[in-house]
Image (cartoon, rainbow, N blue to C red):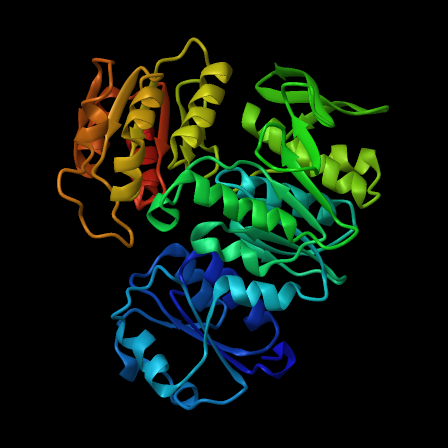
Length: 451
């Protein structure tokens, strides 16, 4: 399919963070864009306000007339999260439409462009947003397809006037193998998505294949210690090609010095918190240097970087209460978030509300979740958010709770969690999870502020 011929785009699962970015991209190009999703959200509200037609009933009769006949001007995109028995999905299948995954469309869009692809089981969203912000803020410019809402721009897609595109490379169902980047960044390769890959070895092999797809003359930038051959390494622990040194916290902000050989960029202030984000910043700085961006412009951009919505996002930051919300849904992501909070606020009691995401992930990593949550002072566990999965016998939040060694722990429903926060008024609160726990953010904020 030729992108320049496309006039109509229908997205099945349009409310997803990656799918909504494509919807905005094609809407920006002047295409007629429509879609379906299961439930309305703030994001689908925004898309509708931008002129995109969305339905929330899985009924093929709701598909507009102009999308009902096959032609080379109509593009149908779907997400693997859509159930296989979806009425709308099967209408397009039976009609004979070619159905495209988001990753395949990103491959089409990035083909022929200078592509910076950021992959990893965690860290990829923040790192890709950092890279895009440095390019935008420095005037170097780029387009970008991001896996989260960049707080500096309040969107997940950026439009540039050059041929540089920053893409978040998603490893789920091997999606990133449609990409052939000029610069590939790999932040992490921890076991995840084992419902798709079967075991960690298969996931590792997929990342290695992605790394091998860097274009001739391009570069692979990866965190030190990953099982990857060659490439350029980075770390915050030294002994890598590029490192962060003299990491420190001053007045609640993280500072570090970037070092690569004889190149030293001192006193970089990072606009967001977290040791893991310092490491992400090292990869972003290295990428920017390879694009010949002035180091003073890089410093300025990192200082003004506001992060990504639901990635270590401050909801409340006052003398009485600190409330941080994070998307973490893997034990190592939780470890990064909790460790950073404990480093920032060592004298405050940390209350964490965690919603496990997926039955398979809970089953596979119950021990890891328990170990990390034991780092907190108080833990409230919600029920598992199933997303695309059906229940698995014997798998529930109690698997984590029963493995935890701390005493101040409980499992409860969402309303009870809100009530407990309203009653206890914790001085330091963290909510974590990739499900619908984000719907608790405003009620919890109100509970702490007595609204």
